[in-house]
Amino acid sequence: MRNMVRKGRQSLFHFGLTALGFIGFILLVASLGRPTLPQ
Image (tube, rainbow, N blue to C red; front, side):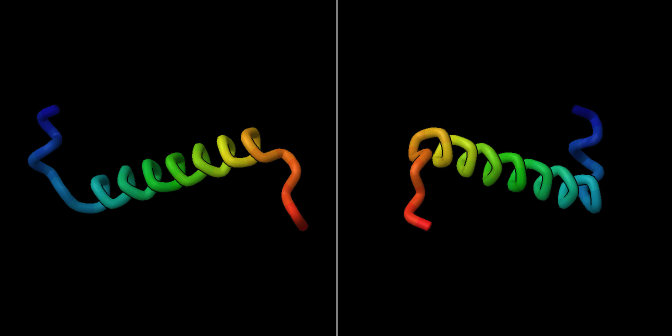
């Protein structure tokens, strides 16, 4: 936790990874909860 002081590319990179993972998790739950999509 010492690297919390160094904010920059790593913070943006980790934020992007977290956002992508969160969106992917939501899409996965949605696809599992609703397997029959009207498309």
